[in-house]
Image (tube, rainbow, N blue to C red; front, side, top):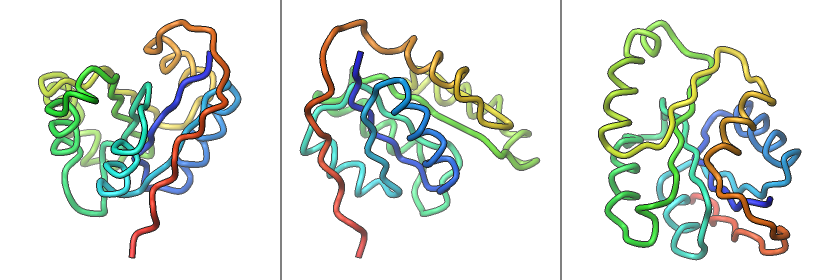
Length: 147
């Protein structure tokens, strides 16, 4: 099964690990680093799943993005996964509150990994995707670079 996946992922090492992992599972992913880029991609194409890092540094709140996704009729049913790795002490301290808030606002899953595990990550992502047989011929349009 091939899924079209949008990633809002700022850390280059996370973007690389997630992209490689999903490609090995036969999925297509476009990685964005800002809300603006992610919104452009969503305006141009349909995606099967959205993955966002929890602790973003480039301004805004991942929860604002999640609420925007849930208010939009075109994306309100799209599975939304929050991802956290390389967590700071503060992030560990806030984890339960983030998990509760994410669930309340409509996140489908919150994945926490101290070190990235490709197999575990893919299993968790694949469990959220509908089972369908289709090729991955369609490309997700890339977001324009930030200026």
